[in-house]
Amino acid sequence: MINIALIGYGYWGPNVARNLYKNKAYKLSAICDKKVERLKLAKDLYGEATQYMQDYDKILHNNNIEAVALAVETSAHYRLAREALLAGKHVYVEKPFTDNVKDAIELYELAKQNKLRIHVDHIMVYHPIIRKIKEVIDSGDLGDILYFDCSRINLGQIKNDVSAMWDLSVHDLSIVDFLSDGAEPISINAMGEKIYSEKESITFLNLKYENFLASITASWLSPIKERRIIIAGTKKMLVYDDVDVLNKLIIYDKGFDTNKNVEYEDYVIKTRGGDAIIPRLEQGDALFNSLEHFRQCIIKQQDSLTDAKAAIRMIKILETADKQLK
Image 1 (cartoon, rainbow, N blue to C red):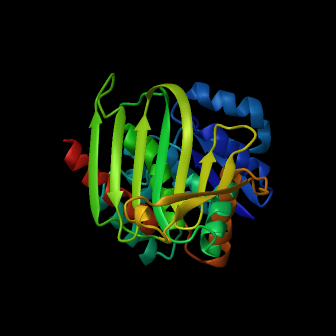
Image 2 (image 1 turned 45 degrees about the vertical axis):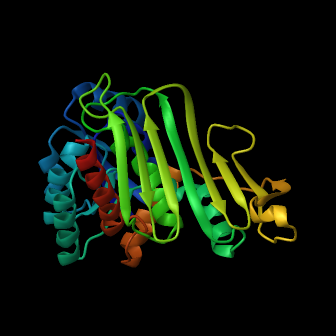
């Protein structure tokens, strides 16, 4: 059993606490938050099953606690993760890992030196549907990937500590990274605007990789909620629509017929339409899967799928895009 403490019981912390408590291979040893009212809410749920405290140092100095889960604002990730690593504890941290590459590299090196595990919760990598898409791509069913078209938009929640790109697009970047086995872009272009916020509340991020393109839209200013990814291959195409209750994933046997038999086809490529398939999907909670993967990495002493190195690839893209936005 892994003894773990949760730091932060604000927006996302309750979800982390619930899944840690649900996993009986974890012992949720403590919940820590600076605000007493948040700790009271936690105690109403978990009673005497765990400890509650405002002082983070008590967790750092508790040798029985092997790992910490950080569910705090991004600006606090570096300091708290560094202190936890120096105290000899494995670290689970919400995305984005840090707000700059320099700090992320320092934490990566520190964990490596101390033989500790960092797991960044790029939660979509642990979603059953993303795992299914990976399976489809690796099977060759889609053919060569041509492009990813990702849209993550809704009305609010507008934040001032991170932009919509750092808050929302990081999900899609992690998906593209996972599905492409860590491919890195050769060209990055970004456009955005600060509306009602100190950071960009709407962004358009375009990436050119060696073999494919990726377009990623993020916005807190949309009248509708959309969580959609289109992936086009040379053989087939698919659409993942997380908002669609019934058909979240559809694989389309559509593409282009490049066989030219008549003169007219020297100028026009014929489209090809076939069946649409809704594959059978496994059920599972992405956050539960993410936390369980972290536990397995600690036990087996292996790197996480979304470790610091993977997170650094994301942050490099976001930093480059930020320079263009400015």
